[in-house]
Image (cartoon, rainbow, N blue to C red; front, side, top):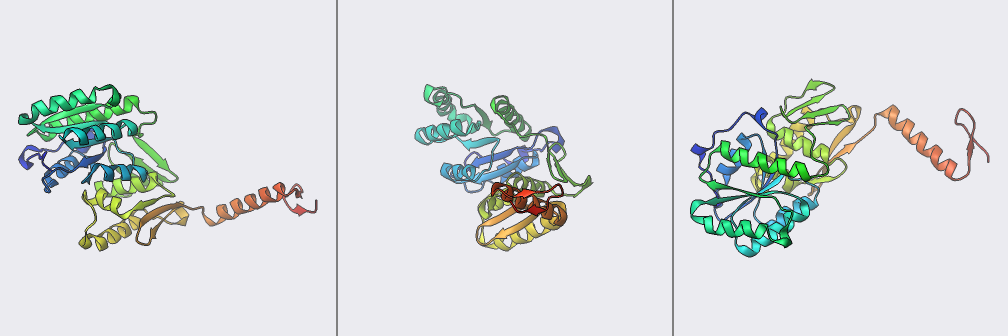
Length: 289
């Protein structure tokens, strides 16, 4: 990425100091964006890198809900496209620019105030910057989104017996800590938030490694998911099962334990029978209508 933050200027802050964010990072001309991605992870966030704006849009269409977009300073027309997309998605933007780009940055900020782009929250950080300064900029942008968003992401989420706590990035099952790493926590939360939907392999790669899938990571992803399945004890007894969708990705399914499923199936059968005009006695036995 051309908007690069040097490693030595990126001291991380404790993950409890701020709310973790799912951040889309638009890649620039410099392919080595790892220092920036590492900085964001040190700050407790989950970055996902995209080489083009349309790839970011495709990820949003898959159901991912990003807290903000981090981008180097683009040319005028791509910038207008970025503004239009983020206005529609209600995603704030943080622009990374060098001091020599101040004139271009001023033009970009002026374009963001144009009537056609009204409603887009845009902030910036001047490079080189420190991890602490960048973290503050991201926090401000995220709070701006929460003040306008109808349903901001809650700090704590409950999915059946599973509980996820953002401040400590802690996942528990029946109150017992599952000892997830920060990246495992992010992947698990995305799977639970998208239960019943296929999470594409490419998106899983971006969550884990911040970049698209590579051949040598294909097997690594399967092993990673297998470990996560065991750590969370995803099974029928706990109400969720994680299945692999061939050549596509993974889907977390909500399932009912055996007795509960039998009861639900019986209730559905009774409902269908009633719809056909069949009557039942007081114990639910079917009688001729």
